[in-house]
Image 1: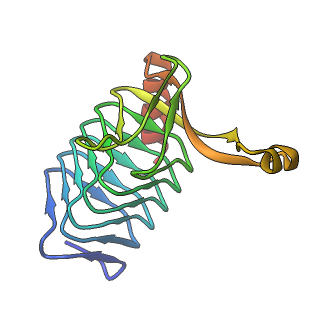
Image 2 (image 1 turned 180 degrees about the horizontal axis):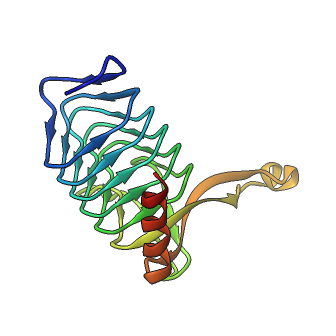
Length: 171
């Protein structure tokens, strides 16, 4: 049953025990069993949310996005343009991912980006935070300009999982 503060289109598929807060907009998406959708969240057509995912307030998921099971999306995140977030990954508050985004993995010392035959993919259990890197070019360097970029700072462990459980308990 929806409240007047929820817009849930007829073509939305909800699994068992899904919790949806107020002020949400859901259109043409699938949300798996046991997932939670926070306040002021919009999930558009073509988005698949796995089981036991947590999507915090003020986040936006755009067409073609897939979240595998047990993904945690922090507040004010944006996930766009066919991004794949693998099982157990954590996106800290404010992370923005789109097809043109490069994600720097400080643990594995690699860069993830969209390839012609596959979407931008966030690895399983990755913990992603907002970061920045210096811009190139003499003028940009001279001005000290930075560009925002997501950074993987670690991979999910017992401490990370405990923090996610604590967040759930506090809700």
